[in-house]
Length: 425
Image 1 (cartoon, rainbow, N blue to C red):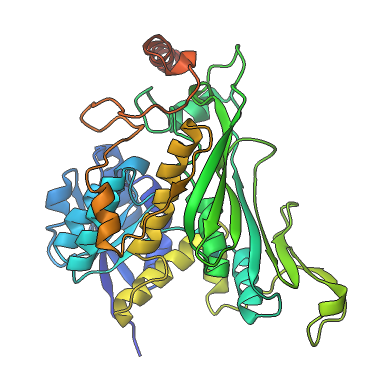
Image 2: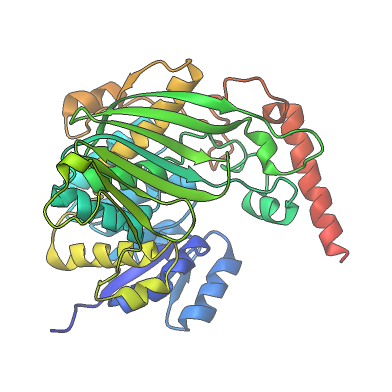
């Protein structure tokens, strides 16, 4: 039976372009692309073809005739308002991480999703990496018993002297990356653990790893004096997670570990994609030949070859496949609006905990109206808004030169100088 073709629009032509092939491979048709930068829309037409409609206005974009779903790949801190506008028109939403950057936005997003006939899904791709899918398979098989403790790390340091990359990523001191609090980019470390175990945070505390980049470097790393946030989560099943946000300690890698009653399973840090499965010697399950086994998970998925061509270890492909399957089947995704706002709440309240020397915060359940009411007017944010409104929350507890008005001005001047030097090449 032929799959129903779903007409999709992409908002954010940069990151959004990574989904083009996965959309077409899963029976989607990209009918419109919107980006405030016309150069991005022109590139989209070069790749997709003359049939795609181009927009620089979001409201015109979501009124495109026949549009059924949108992929939100715009700026990290601006997803929620656009998701809400699409949901209000009955348009399905696949939103990049993070779903909301204020608690009030989370409340508004949940309320909009509940009223809408459309589906909302968080485009979190790290759970779909092969080792995380294998860890879920093993854990859900029951041989390890109940999870007691788990760890998730997402380490993404940048070379502070790679000015080309850093200015491309952060073109001004008001850009969201300039002083991104380390807790906010938490979904790549937290979501895989939730996906594997089914546990969900209910109370958190966070501590900073303070280690500013030294003098003599000119990159955006100067804007973030912390190298990591270490977040401890007490979960609804009484297990505990320890996760980082976007960390910059050690080397570039992502790793996960789940410790349960009878053993543990973890992804190795050697870049091979292997997992290490270990049981207590006195609790070996039937069929286990040894207490410990290290292996590369087999990918028997019917679309393994297509996924291999996609980014983030195939995660970008599986995210699109799941989103379109949910639309066709009329079911809610696992990474639904409640999952999304739960992870966002860990990010937002984790930052406040870090600012307050590890003060614990309860994580709300936005299924409950009483929890929504507590946060419906909470608009504290560490980010500049698109209209230039300054942050209402500091990005770091530490007083730091590069977050001052003088430091920001120096960074912006260095960007201008860099661009002039490039023009002369």
